[in-house]
Length: 83
Image 1 (cartoon, helix red, strand yellow):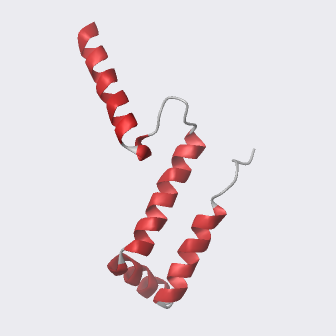
Image 2: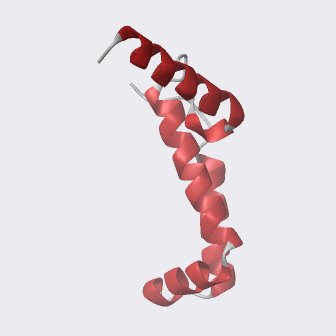
């Protein structure tokens, strides 16, 4: 791999990180990245009715209760890593 290839790859990565919020950046810690992934997942579960109904069926809960549980789990993600 040549130096120009590495520069091109790094500039493309920086462009994607600036354009899309969830791709992270150089100063992002592993915990923050994991929390972003979990929040995106919970938001997707709550926002897409078929996925939400699948989880409700699998856990034998009502759809409203499952939505509430996901929203509570998303709320509990706020905080710093333990340890």
